Every structure is written in structure tokens, then in C-alpha cells.
Image (cartoon, rainbow, N blue to C red):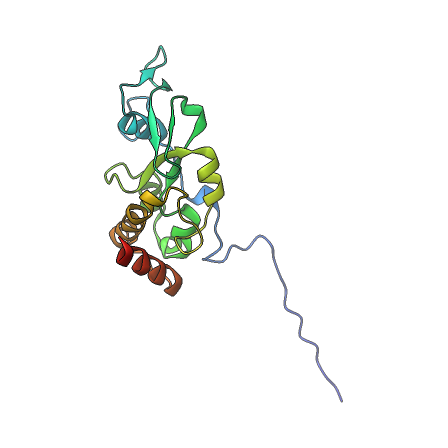
Length: 177
């Protein structure tokens, strides 16, 4: 027999539409050009007492934040990350891969909806990573219902898909609230 062997070429440079790359989501921009980027704006808006800014007024140097993920209070902004309730990678896999660059940037810096971004401890944000609501919940059980509500609100507002595990998790959580 004269069998032809098919070889399939692979090129590691090709990015499939669903392949996530954080650089596709330009974040911490300064949309209103006031020298305070999205991170600073969230720190300012979520501090439970007036923040102290640096000499130029561009960076938050201290304030007082309640991290609803852990239930802890923080005063040093370097202890905090700004979390996307629906992580960038999860957004990407839930439909954002097809968005324009502008829409991805708008999502990554969404200050128009308080449910989108939240100041939380670095450790909580890093334990969450890119996990969805079925894979990770805040250790502070008192915030889990609110977290589920925000998850649904962000997914709905941005037209993102939810898989069965997400739907089951938020349904169960909200029934218990």
C-alpha cells in the first residue's frame, strides 16, 4: 500500500480566538486624564475614610479599606489589589474574546458600575486568580451572596455567557441568601 502520512503543522505564534492573553485587556488607564488611573480611582472611591494622596495628587498613599472577601481592614494600598469581579480570563472565555479592543479596555477599567471592580487583599485576589464563581468564593461567608449577585450583574451587563457550573453555584447561593 501507498499510504500518505498527513502531518499537521503547528505554529506556536498562532493565537486561537479563545486563547487568553492579559495584554488584550489594557487596564489601569486614566480615562478622565486627572493623573489617577483606574486602580487609584477604585482605591479613592472604596476607602471608608478620606484617602491621603502623594504630593502630585496622583497616587493613594493611605486610606482605610474593608476587604469584603476576607472581612479584614487595610490601611496600606500596597496590601491591596483591584479585582475584576469577573476575572479578565473568565470574561475572555465567556465571550470577550470577540470584543473590539476598545470594548475590552472599557471592561478592564469599568468605573461606571460599582459591581465590576473591587479593592481586596492581594492574598484573596491571588487565591481567586482567574477562577469562576463555581471554583472560588470569598472566605468571608457574609459576602458570598453579594459576590454571587455581582457576578450575575457583571456577566449580564456585559453579555457574557455562564456555564452550567456557574449557574448552579449562583442559584444555590442565592436560594440560601
